[in-house]
Image (cartoon, rainbow, N blue to C red; front, side, top):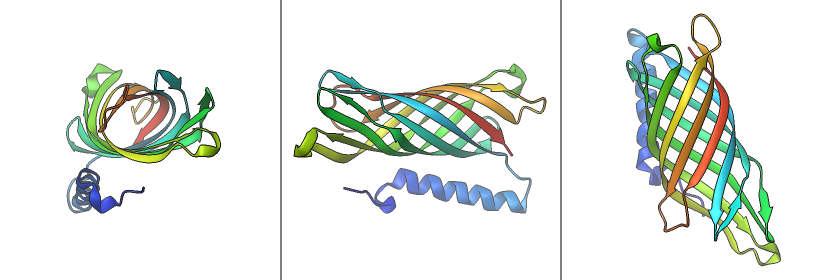
Length: 185
């Protein structure tokens, strides 16, 4: 079951806000935007079994005010994981959230991100097709650290931990660890 964009007001409203800030930026002092990419390691617990698929993530964001930004993310699967005859993958995560970041003067930057997501989870128990592919609405909480790689602090490497709290009664939330790069423009 694939959710349409219009059925998810959080993602639709976040996209509309990003477009508004992009248009405002051309008429006045341009807000700063940022974007990045990462590789993610995931822990999914289903019926006391842990699965660890990998994925890639692209993110873009814009600063609404100093150190508070709106961020959009898209994760896509690199590999699945199998255990006890069950193969589990994480084909897609689409998310939006507010990012709160420490001041520039601190050097190493820390940030928190809170938002919502649509998580697509796919599990297959052999020829039966059980339990199948399903989309979940989820809450998102992330903590990360950015280490600047250039003197102007625009290019940085980051390390992040994220939790996706699925809307259904599950054994445990999804946990992701990410290592990536980010550039501010």
